[in-house]
Length: 416
Ligand SMILES: [Zn+2]
Image (cartoon, rainbow, N blue to C red; front, top):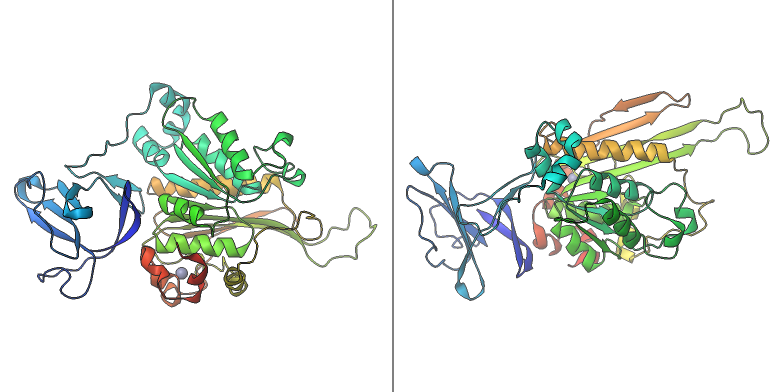
């Protein structure tokens, strides 16, 4: 089983499975490494595996016969000592996590009775506490804390999620107060990430395993990249393609579920500006694109549905290190934003994620909402625009840190 290191912090080492390599040859002899050695056992392995040969980073023992369904795992630590493997996350439908027999990790502690009561209606809608526990266990990084990002952070917290990270390098301005959630006049001049985190802490239970971390940095900053690597899900609430591209790369390279929200209201070329009768309506384009990217199923934001229609410009912006900040005077630059549209978009995007955990959605999905000029809503699931087989990002799926070594030129700005 070929693996790649995702996170080398001593306290939290993670590995991404790249490929299964059925081979009787000693691992590493074919130049592929690092690897996990996998074998079947009919009796419980000793408390500690024997020493591992070079290039072998860990070992899995899969129970056979009467031990079928049980497994044990060990990883090599510095100095050649072996430590227990604590868990395996299976990113995809269900978002399951399984613990080896010798894990030191406690499975999710049973939720407090007060929390079960607090979220009893959500638990009922998810048909049981077990699904809800898989939902609230997800570590979600919300990237962008403006109109949709604030709604997303609050909506996720209102589902009971225990660990949220808010990534944004902007400050709250007066023009942030209108449509966004969570901000007050007292927040003006303070970082959006910190203001949103403070608000979310205020609506979560005062005791229990709840953590809300603000990261006051652009997604290209090392601390933001590290936060994204530590998350299970990246929730993209940005209105520029360059941070969307960066987050999409992190999602593909590190096998994160990505939820992307883009909504807007635009007016086409209609009657010339100026006084006109109220019954002359300009053409209006209003809607949202919601994308759920599930690792292991075809497609990413670059190839699935034109989510990065201005991808070339986004790559150039990133390569030049262009600022992602917008001018403070929005009136000549921004498309319109309607809170009701944003609420609908965020709600449906969160539901896509919840339905992935429920296994009702199992693959990368693109959902498009469109309101006609007459206010009629239509919902479509557009087909992919480009085959993922031709996608430069998908070609590097799951490579983890190694994806930054060479490859597409879009890698340049993101050395972790
Ligand atoms: Zn792709």
